[in-house]
Image 1: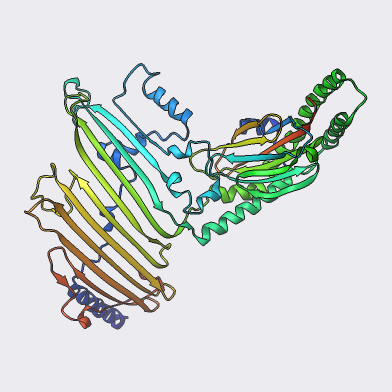
Image 2: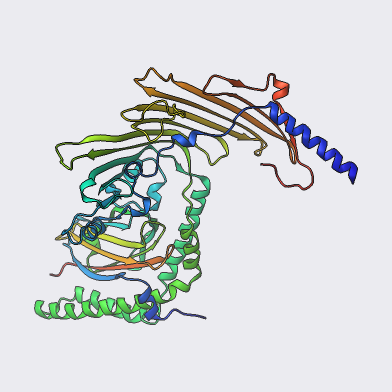
Length: 406
Length: 136
């Protein structure tokens, strides 16, 4: 037992030593460039829970009425996010979302909001209150279709709906009576003996009977549906419907905040602005997945190219670009990933643009045994690879159980 | 076998799902065209279109656009039945709706129904019955 412990300790020390030689930061930092879900509100400082998301014109009207106390008061803040093209007469059923055809109209989102309050901690002090207005847009330029998993789930849902449709049409105790009145209605339509007035009176009576009988037949049918097997099957599928996509995508997001420092609409200045272009190939972390982000920010919270804070963020414009790819193959045994980041401050001579590159690869030679290799160049130009290729190879072995290394 | 009491069915959901009406057409060769838009956006729908017990369309997914049912000559004194199942997939709303319209008769015809289902994933069953008549 002592011998095994000793061997494990020695091997662990060796692994630590190899780790120390390999001084490459493989942390994926592309996330810092990602566009926020609601850029306008992030810049304005409104929490996501306070954003109204009306799904149609009526609910939008109600939301405004509530916020303004029936149009009698101006709230301290109000924010909404709407998809105007989904409010129109054109309706998109679920299957219309499985293509790029309607991508722009379906994804187009407008967000807007305003705040009228004082600085933090003094929000309700009237003399310090200023007005800020935010506006944002989001839309997909290219949107991939559903993944095979989502499509399979869709067809399972359709099958359940088809079975439910059949169950809904099963005759019941009132069906014969309904058919009797339908036959009478057809006979009346063909009748040539009654006068026009007699026909009109008889028709009106039959319409009332048919409406009543249709209602009775339907009520019995509706009663049985929720407990039926296809209904429950459709419910289980629809309640957890996954919307995964696979293919090339390209999204655009922008937002800006205007400040009205003396609360006059003829005196405004752009306080903050940003634009994000995100594209790549989405593949559900299998095969090749890639993504790039180009970001422009005006007056950012933090200048990405200036972590030391040498520059003032006031009136600064930054442009950052990042790209990442991931190749996973041989049943996930071999993965190759890379990331590149470029960051710059536009129109500034104090800070030069800088870039970072990381490439890492990993191969699982056996259960709990992985060979990894990483190469990196940091923003400051320092290349980290441990001196030579052999030293850069890192062998990780797990002992004990069969739990997969991560 | 457990059944859901009628009272509970109506308590769980709101809105009408059944409709009967008559549509005035002329005995001629003008095509009678139907449009059916199940909603709301993001919901999944399947429909059957039946004329006098004979299926004109079976298990049609999503919207039905410019569906020619026949001509005035062939449809007079006949019944159109449209059965639709709409399942709530959208996470934005539990509202389902059906927007039905006919053209080719003496006047365009349109009827809309809505039902809010109780829970995510629930389904609403709709039926529209139309009798084509040349009598006014």
